[in-house]
Image (tube, rainbow, N blue to C red; front, side):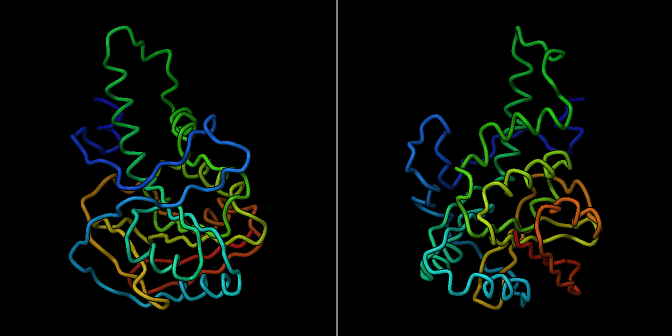
Length: 248
């Protein structure tokens, strides 16, 4: 059984990535900043359900008065979300980490099946996979962003990768930077994507599963993930989603 099967991820044709990729580290010049979400965003899809989001309101309150800030969205490049922040003067970068993670696992599986590649020489532990994945993802200059939209990404990543990804994101945030994240209180029954509906609400869109949920985080585990952040504030709702803000 392949490690993709163990993770509950099958190999398929997949789809192309809809967002711009960060510039590789060796291709940046000294003055290059975060990469904006350029090109065509995802095509419109059928509307999902809309929920009031106290976490989003608190997130925007913390960004109020920032002026021309920078934001990293770790989900698909929805037009509504891009427009919402761009209209408020933000420079937005998008990187669909969960899709990239699935593509990475698929590419690893294919590579290990090639003649001459000895799997025993490749570190296939969760820590080793996390290190290889982050060599070419979440690659931005230090202190590039004022805010990050993590959504419920961490519930779907292997815990070793989630831990290292938050360590990297902490370095990408400026002092006082804000992270908005969602956590499921129990293993989700379906897979959802999120986009901004307005300043008070989120739109939840059912989508094809990219990766199965890996972990349900308890409050102490969430605090440990974001241990370098000085403030944490949570909003618990009836739909089993916990909205959480972290301020660096």
